[in-house]
Length: 395
Image (cartoon, rainbow, N blue to C red; front, side, top):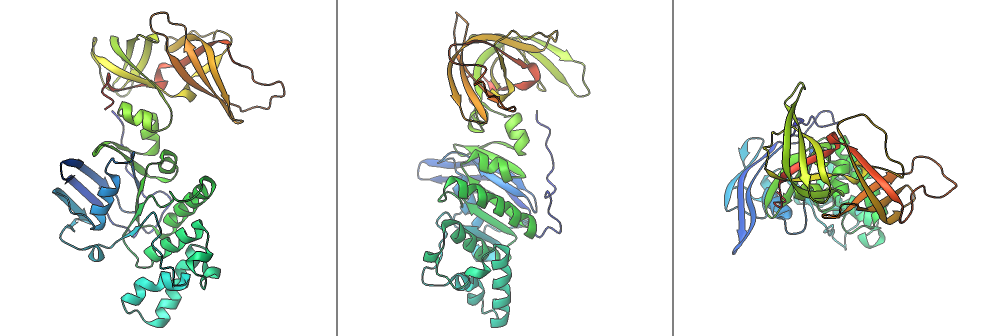
């Protein structure tokens, strides 16, 4: 059970966005079910991300919100009003696409001004407003350039300014940074978050990149095969994954199937249990859980690589909630700020490989402390592991 945190719009003041309520949305293309009973409650002013692999249905859901697709079943409300009968231009929603969709023959100024021109805005109003939004995206000095004279990041900022100049209540972003290189993508992500903080409207952001979603979102919905598997803050999604799929998809993890051997209630303010699991590859493992599990129940267990302590010496502890394993370094991968170790466990019954990440917080001029073929001890607290559902189910 995950304690849900109600979003407040973060640092934003004077929120101008809209609530978006999605209930029981189904969508199929022929015999392929793209969305299966999707229900989401997106709050005014949130930076809300739809995260999942290719083909999970996130872009189709975005297109339904925009008005480019109609669901087979379900409802879509913006600020409590049913908008499904309305075309895209009557929904107070605007969309930024992957390919920018700029007019190549128009200047930056005219691209941003286009939505105002087609609404017959007064010339003086157009100029003042275009420069207001060009300043927002830091492009006022590029107003007279054509798109082919801009970098990828600059083109994306033009697209953002053009989308925002209509003052939508909800901005939909469909993989907007996917065409940029990694370093520019990170820079644009920070700029996008800053723009969101300034204007205070609702952002709904589609991405397959876990780090993007974790970096900027107030909340995230993880989708797979048309279903919403979990909704929560980045911290909740990462630290308390609801399913094996979520645990694997969000960052790296170690995932094993096992059987509950023992359960004991812990004296705590909220109901909590200490479970002991029999896992063939690991032996007897302790894990705390908010949800009571039953002896004999088959479950999946996960522990993140950075939660595991690795040492060449046996840890000395009197705590009864520490898990400890022995193994040998099968592969060390040095990345400067950290080393990722692949450890082959010493379990004759069913040996396994566990990933461990060790951060390098201190300067060392003598090389790594742990190297290939070293015999090591692995340890972690019962609070650092997590039960993520039934064994082998992935959900």
